[in-house]
Amino acid sequence: MSKQKQAPNVFHVSLLSHFFLLVATLAVCFFVVQYLFSSSIRYFLQHDLVVLVPVVLFLFGVAGLIASIAARSVAYPLVHIINLLEEEARSGATGRIAYRSNIEEINELVQALEASRKSFTAIQEAPAAVIVCDRDGVIRYVNSRAKSLFRWPVNLNENFLDQFSSEADAALIQTVTGNGQVLNAFRIRGIDSTLWWFFPLRNRHTSEAGFIGIGVNMRQ
Image 1 (cartoon, rainbow, N blue to C red):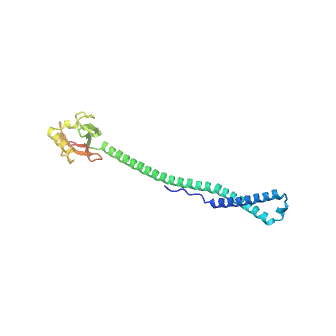
Image 2 (image 1 turned 45 degrees about the vertical axis):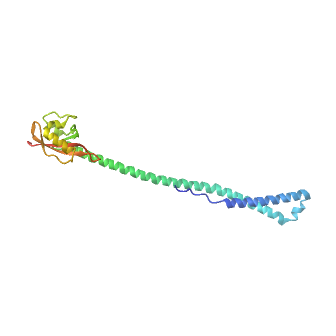
Image 3 (image 1 turned 90 degrees about the vertical axis):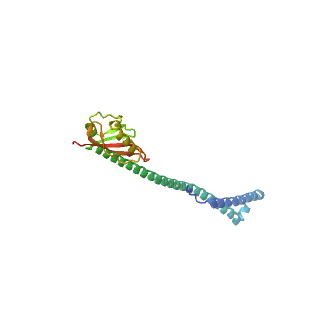
């Protein structure tokens, strides 16, 4: 945390002015007492230098006091303004850094969304049939080619593994939940002309989240 700037030191000016005022006040009191006891103003008129010294000291004291007050009234507002400007500059720099960071995050998000949109468009318009299933084989997505390719109704939440033989089903589950290697082609029951290749899908923790199937009709 940075230290705030301090106002210029005006203590010495104030101390000197108070000293002059004290001496002048004592001198004036002395001459007033002398005047009251002598009942004559001749004492003052006959001692011009003695009278002049306390008057000069009094004027110096008043001037010093005014100077100290002026120094405080000018210096402290200036220092306060400087502190505010420095704080604003620090806040502005922090705000600019946060603003740039937010802009970068937004740009990355936009780029990721754009890449996802392009990938989705490519899958949706792919000439091959594409099906996305979870680990249990439940269908979560089919593209338009897959809908037209199947002779059996394709519905979301249907178990895709039911379309395979038991041997293929066991091999599929073992591969998807195991080492994640690409499976061999499997023929769906009743559609001997369609071959399917399956690839595991992983989440950010590198664990298998499901699989994607790509089917090609060998008659077309």
